[in-house]
Length: 225
Image (cartoon, one colour):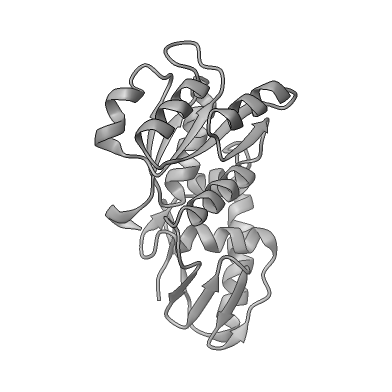
């Protein structure tokens, strides 16, 4: 996506969650500005001009997520995704009244958050085509269909998710940790889990052509024709 990548403003006071979400969204190819509270948001809006904001409703310092949502509605066209506690119905309703477009209830899977972000960016026109190509490999993210040299490739959900992460960084090395975070939402799994699924993905892709998923020893994997 490069310099034209969608810009995301993330405001979340939980440091571990903020880092995990920022990493997952960055691995999707977005530019991410992550802040611990709402104090610095007003001065960043004009310069950063986010396409989408991911906001925790309850912030300990500065304006709340609701306050930031109202500010965004006044000053930008950014989509707003609120993070709320699972049982906080009042927060959800207040979020929609403040101008939120969608919400994700905590605890959430990183896959769900990424899907909601993609949906909002498509709705606002910041993500247009869902189809990309690498050599003779064609991937339609919307329909989750994969073809190689004109042949359909039957991938499991996990294999496809791995391919999508690699495809958003064409020609670049993606580490095992990045893949663990993006696909499984954690960094606590054994990295061998990645190796097993990448091996299966590679085998299915190579049934119809030369190698596309390359191992970079000590660094990770790269998708390159």
